[in-house]
Image: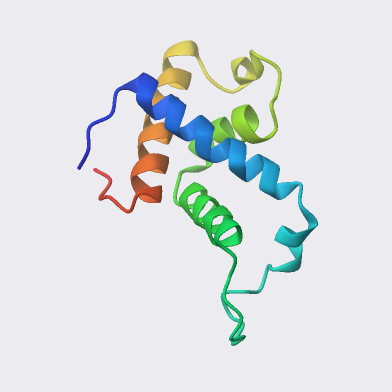
Length: 112
């Protein structure tokens, strides 16, 4: 498994979630919600498959990990939004674990 620094994980996560945020704005995303169960012979566009991969990776995280990534990178909440949920050390511990879990799940690596 690749070992990333906190800064590398932050950059990778921000990159993937920036695409995801932009893709959520597109109407096409909501129009293809049932593509996994569809027996259509139409190929799935790469962008849609990529967005669903990101969504799937997010769903593998705990509720707090999801909250941190979604609030900061998808919803762009105010800077100190986390103060009502976590202490500073807990926030950074969960955030680091969220980065690691998200990237390793997205890259289909085993998470420890």
